[in-house]
Structures are given as structure tokens and as C-alpha cells.
Length: 435
Image (cartoon, rainbow, N blue to C red; front, side, top):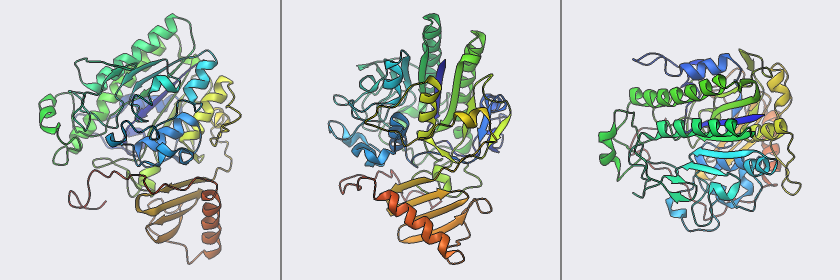
């Protein structure tokens, strides 16, 4: 069987039509992803491992809580980490692609890496046999330069120059990878990790903006909801072309496709009904869309309320391939294959998060959520209050203490956050009001 993991960057929970998103002036924003959901399974209560980019990607790659690795303490890894041998995904650590490659899979990452820089780290050193994309967290869609002004587009471990809008380049390279894999009659694992709809705010027709944002890719004085939706739509078109290729070549029943986002949405995102966004452990920062299509295995037009997280999908890919984790690096993720095949099935799945930023902590169990931000603590019943507005800590003190104690017990099993770990916000209240 073949497996494709499609990851958007900073996509909000309700940015897609199938999650309640509104149409844009040009029409439906995500018709192909909406169609993918109609052909498979949509999760309502699924999460990212972190509310910021690179920590989630550590969890995706390892199937383990990202806090176990020093590099994931960066929120997120930034360009200042270049040359630091500690700030990245260690090549010695088993990964989802390395385990699959050892089992005979053809592995490729097309798109964003954001797990450390050469000479110490790269996709090729962590299990991917093929790589096309940027190493850093954000790049200009036309010049392909990162926030330091350096050209950041790679083919393997070699600098690569190719003209074009990055979202479209990533889509075309992904289709080429799938065609080559099917032609070779070799099972494949493709990580298709878009930079869209991450800043800078550039749609296909915005090449003229490239020069003006080169010194500040955060693009704090630009963008609009319309541009943002077009960026999602360009990604959606590429995903549709890839799915059409798979179906046309008769590989639909042999290909498991999973789509999600690395964290909650940012400035122009729609996270409704949730509050907060990227960098927050409130629901808007970690509740993300998850869509699964596996023709013949996953029932069409199905829905699941199973609580789950990024690393659970890593465990699910290994389970689907019949590949075991390395015994020295047991998974924290739990396989969802039974849920894929029987969406009504649910099991208890406690989840935990922490952030250096604002000293945040969170624990979800069932419908309850414990949340700490700065020195304030909360208890929410997400079934009735997904916006986290009614603090129940005083009404349900036993539940509050139980949830807090469970988080503390879990936290004691993780390495402490290093004092030197960086928090890179990019902008603050001087740039825009609080969410």
C-alpha cells in the first residue's frame, strides 16, 4: 500500500468548507479537500501536537511527544539555529520515513522541512530518499528566500533554483514523485508539506510583492482575507490534481491519504468556534482539521469525534504498513486504524501539551480540558463550551484537581524546558490587537 501525508501550514480549523468555512468572492475556497472529506472520514476533535510549526513536525516524524528532543523546545526553530548541532531532528533517531524506508518504501518529502539546518540536519539524513523544498520555517513564494534573505529551495541536499509560485512547484513535484513510484511498482510514503497558507501573503498574481517583503517575511502591513483564501485555494487545486493522478492511475484503493495542519490558524484564519490561534494552547491553536481517505477501507462521508493528535497518525501509518517502532524509541502515538475503518468506534485518549511561551499547559480527557496560561488556570467542558468561555474550576473542584494532577504527573516524565529555549513570536500587540 501507499501513504500520503498532506500538511498545510497555519491553516485554521474552519478555513475549509467541510469544516464550516465560508465561500470567498471567487466561490468555494476548498472544493477538492471538501470532496476528499466526502469520500472519506472527517475528524471533529483532533489536534496538533503543538500550536507552532516545528515542534509538531518533531512529533510527526518520531511518533513521540516532541518534548523528548531538545530541538523541539524551540518555539519554533528559527534561522539563528543554523549551525547549532543540538537544534534539529537527530539523524540517529528513528523516524516514520526511516522505518518505512527500511521496510522497502520509497520515501519523499516535498515541501517544508523546518527541523534543523545543514550540515547537521536534513530530510535526507532522517529517512527521506527524496526531498524538494525549503529547510526553514517560511520563505517567499516567488524568490524562495527565507527570513534571512538566503535562497532556501533544495533538491536533496543541493541548492536548487527553479522559477515559479512555490505552492504550484510543490504540487507538481508531488505528482512527479507519485508517478515515478507507481511506474517503479514500489510502495511509497510521501510527505506533502505545503508552506501555504503561511505568510508572506502572496497569491499567484502577487509576484510584484516579492521584492517589498524580502526584508520582513512576516508581512505585517499586508495581506487580506481574500488573499489568504486564494492561497488556500491554490493549495487545494494542487491536492485535487494529485488525487486525480492517483485515481487515474488506478491506485485509489492502495493509497491512504491524510490531510491536516501543523497547528491552528494565524492572522487571517478562521478558527470558529474556537478562541486563540497559533502559539496558544486554547483550542484555536491546537484543534485542527483532519481528513482521511482510503478507498475501500474508510467509509465515505463519515465523521469521528475520537480525540487524537498528530503523533497518533504517525502510529497509524506504521500500523497500516505493518511496521514496528524501534524498541528503544517506543511510540507515544496510538494507532487509529480501528477508527479509520469504524468511525463510530472511540477509545479513551488523554492528551497533554506544554509551552514555554506564556508558561502554558493543557490536558484533555474526554470532554474536559485543563488549561493554564501565565498564572491563570481553567477547567472547561468542551462538549458544551468549545469556545472556552465558562471556567468551571470552582464549580467542579475535584475534576479540576484531578486534571491538574494528571498534567503534573505527565510533565514529570518529560525533560524540563531548557532555559535557553527560544520563543519567536514575530509580532506582538504593537503590530495588531490581541486575538
